[in-house]
Structure formats: structure tokens, C-alpha cells
Length: 285
Picture 1 (tube, helix red, strand yellow):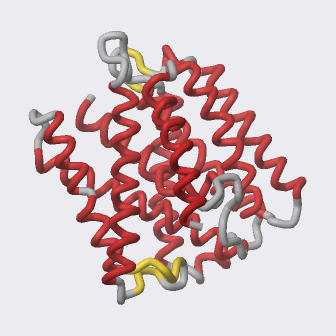
Picture 2 (tube, rainbow, N blue to C red):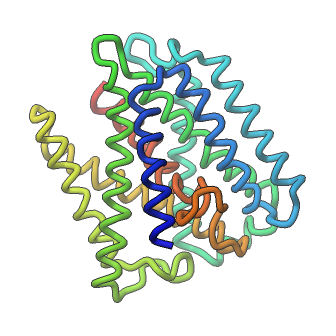
């Protein structure tokens, strides 16, 4: 398993970094459609793991919505005079509200599952609320690049990814070595309070990198934003775990050997990216 994880990471990380930093935003947005179609197909298994028609109909719905976004909001219109396109902004605000609701579902699980566990409609809606705001956030951040600073948008995307990776890695190792108190045993039995604290502490390495490269930033604000985004990413992770538990699925898919499905790799990012983008608009635009 570890060998497969390493091999997958060796080819996947350069591919992701190349797309983030070197793809023009118009190509980047269309490449994302393919990635999110994979995630959508995997979410279809959460809706109904036995029915291929349900899985493909949800995938088709997500595909139509993402293509429509790319066509109706071209990459050069995502930002205008420092303001995010109202469609993108509305989607991300709705997404942020969804993550607040999802947190309530997580905290009250399994009781909350009685409201949606048997409803294909609700689970489809939750899938759209999970995936589409993440897509718009990725495109919006990437579109902040300019001829004067072609890597700026990619750097912001990478910063969020780095925060999520630091949180996940710190949580994994702290949980393995120190974990004694279960965080949300009904949702994800392997996660511990010590792991979450370890993950949050690890994100201070990201803060150090930001302050080193951009010392004019306000340290307190960077720390608060980093910790908040890390906590939100944990909600994204727990949310997918909750939905997979109800669906009786261990991994969302098998497309990434040693890592599971594409959805398993982006579950934390689905929450972290739209929330970070809204924070960026509020404090840095």
C-alpha cells in the first residue's frame, strides 16, 4: 500500500503543480472539468452505489453545470476591476453556507442522517454544493494571475493545498503517535483530538513560509486565516467520511492506487478553497 501511495504521488504531484503554475487559466478551467467529472462519478456511488444510472446522471448534471460556467463566465471575466463575477461570488457564498450546515450534520450524526440518508435528491444536492463551489474557487484563484505576475494565482491555489497537506500530514503522524481521544468516532473512528491539534500546529510551517516570502503580511491575520482554513478543511474531510459511512463505502474510488478515489484526495479542499477565496476577497482585495 505504501509503495503504491509513493508511486502515485511521484507522478501526480508534478502533474498537479504543472497545471497550477503553467496552464493558462482558460485551459486550467477546462482541465478541471475532467477532474471534477471523476469526483462526480464517485459521488454518484455515495448517492446509490448499486445504480449506475443514478451515478452517471449525477455526473452528467455536474458536467453540464461546469461547462455552462466556463461558457457563461469566460476566464477573462472572472475578475473585473478587483471584483469577482457575481455568479462565482454567489456560488461560493452558498458553498460556505453549505459547509456550516454540513458541520451541523457532522456534529449531530447519526441522528442527522435520518433527514437525508434515504433521499437521492438531498444527496445529489449535497454533492453539487460540495463540488461546484470548489470548482469556482479554483478558477477564481487561478484567474488572479496576470502578465505582470503569471504565477500569483497558482501560488494562492498552492498555498491552500499546502495548508491542507500540512493539516492532513500533521494529523496523521500526531494521531498515530499520540492519539488517544476520538474526535468524531461515529463519523470517522480513526481521527483523534490529538491528531487535529497536531495538524493545526503543523500549519504553522505554512505561516512561516508565507511570512518568509511575504514579510509585509500581518502575522496575526496570517495565523488566524491559516488555522481557520485548516479547521474548515477538516470539516470537508469529515463530511465525506460521514456520507461514505452512510453509503457503506470505504474509498470513493480506485483511480489513484494507494490513495483511493479522486474525491478522497480533494475532500478537504472542497471546503477549504471556497472559504479561503471568500476570506481573500474580504481581507486582501
